[in-house]
Each structure stands twice: as structure tokens, then as C-alpha cells.
Image (cartoon, rainbow, N blue to C red; front, side):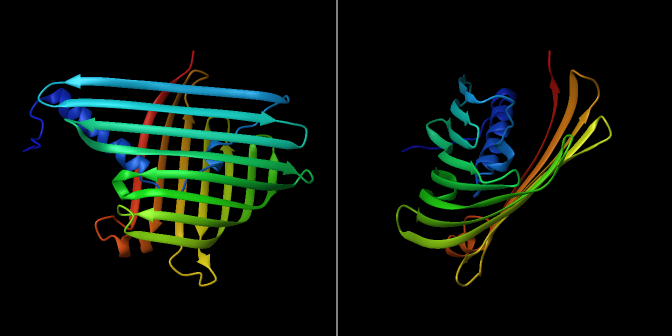
Length: 261
């Protein structure tokens, strides 16, 4: 018979604290693509691969594994974005976090202000009992404002979403409207504020929408040192209604210093 006992030593306590932070971050229902967009000066392919893991044995055995892949194709008018992410945290053989997603998006510039986009995504998250989420959709993105380092965009898209939840006890098949507003504005030379907010109601009822918002503040002390704070919130009333053990609102607040050299 397996008995899970809480850690009694400081290193494991700290590990579990970071584990809980990672779990909360991974529970977000909406993958914020706007927060992951980048601008490039030249056309071509760009890639980034992250791999990591750790093993900590004390009163408990804590194992972590994570990986992320990003590919960008920046063309004259057509653009491709591929994102994938996987995270696993085990404490004495029990999953504290097991989540991953893959996202593929294609954008075609209709003009300087309008872009046509199509996308597909696969996602799962064991901690919120999401066995599978598969979605696809298309829509348009409008540049509202861009000057120097300031910018604002609005997007409206249609998507079809298929969800399997709670060990395949619940199934959702939804048509959704996905709208978002995103902006990034510097304040002087040292402060940058940014926000992206998604609103995703079901069609045609427009009831029990999913809402997600990410706000960030960066304060630059010098060219090499800056302070970053980010608040992320996701609200999904229907998931909480059908699975009472899953909270309707999930949020994180993270702070850190960044040193570049």
C-alpha cells in the first residue's frame, strides 16, 4: 500500500513550493499566443529548443522533466509559428504536474494592418483532468496602433473545440468565438507595461465564456538589469460547474530579476 508522506526537510519543501508554482502556471486554460509572438527584421527560419530536468532525493524523490520547442518562419507576407511544451513533476512517483501542448499557426498579411490567420492546437493537463483538447480555427488580426516600441492589436477568430475530461467521462464539442485585445506600451525609457485579454464564449449561446488575461510590468534599472512582474488569470465557470474539484478561477503572480550579459 502506497502512503504519501509530506516532506520534513528544507530542500524538499523548497522543491515542492516551486512545484506548486509550476502546477498553477500550467493550469491555465488558454495558451496565450500573443505573449509569445516576436518580431523579426529579416525573412527566414528561427528556432529555439529548451530541455531540462532534475532529480532530488531526500525524504521524497522529486523528479522533473521539461522541454519546449519553438520554430518561426518569417516571410514577406506569410508567417508560420510552431510551439510545443511539456512539463512533468513527480514527487515519490506521484504526478504533481503533467501537462503539455502543441500549437501551429499560419498568418498571411493582407495589408499593413490586417492579417489572416489559421491555427490548430493539441493540449492536455492531468491536474485539471483535461485528457485532451483539440481545436482548430481561423480569423483576422487587426493592428490598431504601432509607433516606435508601442503597439496594440485586436483579433477575432472562429474555432471548433473538442475536449475530453475526467478520464473520458465528460466530452465537450463547442463552436467558440475567440476575441482578444493586446497592447504593449513603454513609459519613458525604463518601464514597459503589456496586457493580453482573451474572451471566448460558446456559440450561439454566448454563455459561460472562458476569460484569460496576462498583465506584465518590466522596470529596467540598466541595460543589463531589469525587474519583471507578471499576473495571469483564467476563468472557466463551466469546467468548475461540471468538475467541482477544479477551481473556476486560476491565477499566478510571478516576480523576478533578469540579468543580461
